[in-house]
Amino acid sequence: MMKEKILIIEDEKHIARFLQLEFEHEGYTVTVTYDGPSGLKEALEGDYDLVLLDIMLPGIDGFEVLKKIREHSDIPVIMLTAKYEVKDKVEGLDIGADDYVTKPFSIEELFARVRAALRKKKPHLKKDVLRYSDIAMDLTTHEVRRAGIKIELTKKEFDLLEFLIKNANIALTREKILECVWGYDYYGDTNIVDVYIRYLRSKIDDPFDRKLIHTIRGVGYTLKEDKDED
Image 1 (cartoon, rainbow, N blue to C red):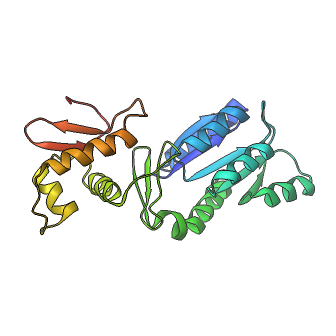
Image 2: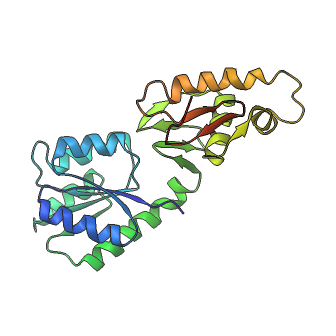
């Protein structure tokens, strides 16, 4: 089962490190940033399941980071702060925070709040979203993103990418791809697979440094993160 990914935006490095170690021990994948601008960039470009967001951040404070996140995403966000004022909690919740934890906090309580926030979102976000590396495919809305960037695909390109992701790291022949994506009743040439792989690469791979679609000479294609020979 794929590990859930948490982004921690916290400028106090000893707290950030403590949280990173504790959540990794619980089985989460954790990324840490230490200021508002880099945290916002990571939240918008990365593919995270939840954000732990401090309020008092250098560059851009947590409230502004949350506002910007909410313009683009409904990812669960739990605010972390040393502020005790009710007005600060109200402001954070009104902007769109899912929960609010005041420092110092019990790590067990924070674990419980994170689990609760993730449970609330799972029926809406996780059930019909197919993920591989930094690609996210919403099977309901047919929206595709890589590294947070929206990518427009045709119906056949979408079907091809879905098949590649569901069979990631497997060597797939052109005949197998044709059979599963185009159907048993397709009587055209297998070159159509090469054509659509080229279309898909131009959108999924070419704009990015790290390539995911690879040619296996004499066989066909595969989707994987480590590059062998194209």
